[in-house]
Amino acid sequence: MSATSAAPALSPAGTRVFQQLVRSGDASRTALARDTGLTPGAITRAVRPLLEAGLLLETGDRASTDGALGRPATMVTVQAGAHQVIGVKVTADELFGVVCDLRCRVLDEATVPVGGHGPEAITDLIVGLVDRLRTGRPEVGSVGLAVSGDVDAATGHVGYSPFLGWRDVPLGTEVARRTGLATTVENDVRALLTGERWYGVGRGISSLALVTVGTGIGCALLVNGQVVHGGFGVAGEVGHVLVDPEGPLCHCGNRGCVEAIAGSAGILERMGQAGFKGLGIGDVAELARSGQPDAVRVLAEAGRAVGTGIATIANLVGAEHIVITGEAIGSSPSDTADDEQDYDVMDPHVRSAFEQRAFGSAARAAIELRPLRFVDWARGAAACAVEDFVTHYGRS
Ligand SMILES: [Zn+2]
Image: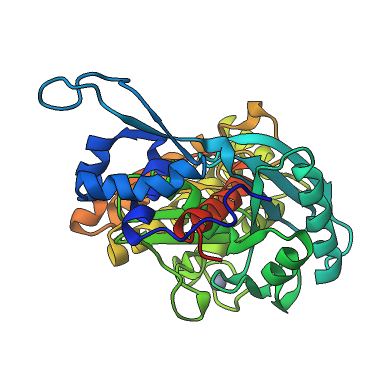
């Protein structure tokens, strides 16, 4: 049982203060009042139930410079380990699970190979993994699950997941029933975005795009501080933005989509057509780095396609920061640290196409390419569970 399960619901002000503290780790009462626009009295009322629940701790003067007369500042610190969450990324091959604290620091991790893809089999594996990770950890109070495909985060319902072959699976309800833990389910790319929003580059900015380049091209958008779900759950399908009407056939039936050119399957297929069969993405990057012309050309085209796609995002929603990650950019999940520089080959082509296509001030967006590890996916799932816990604290 979580120590907080019988807690009273927070006021809206309390929720804001709790969110602020979970993002920053700690803050002085003065800084909290400044950042939230609340009065000192409102801050006191907001933090009281969280102090009583052991989720926050007040300490004396960490910095005595807070306040005009150098009065000792009262610091409020998140007791991050007091509520722990389990994040699980579900893939067709394996489940990757982590235990995180409220600051999304990884305390433990485990993987489970996946056999059958039916909802019952996967649910059994999730429940088994959660039970394993929570053993000896009474602080674990909630679960976050990240699944590719259309996910209704409000209900925990997986509408359609092509990788798993699922339609209409009430995953959240079932995992919550069997584990007794509050369970949040989110689309995997939006889960990554949630992690960035709470603990990464998304802190302090209101419009952020996160693009994953792998077998498919995924995209999640934070616009004006809100994660965009869109009608029908299809917001941000940058993978099917048209790049070249004469380009390779996409599985969607059209030609020249970003995904057909920059997705790992498209890259490997075009390398195969050039006579290089049986390669992985890391091999293609290695060939390009050694100057092999086909690999250089194929990855340059891929980079330009990604750059065109993200320019479209920047032009439409004015993203301030765009993170591009994934197996076709950085290391694939099974790669070692030595391979974590694969993205350097695509980087200049992404940037040049972006600069060419981004209109006006949209070109000011910061572009960041970085590798993606499985632990990041699972941490994103954990971040969704933390977000749910903090936002709905005390409300069951
Ligand atoms: Zn397409």
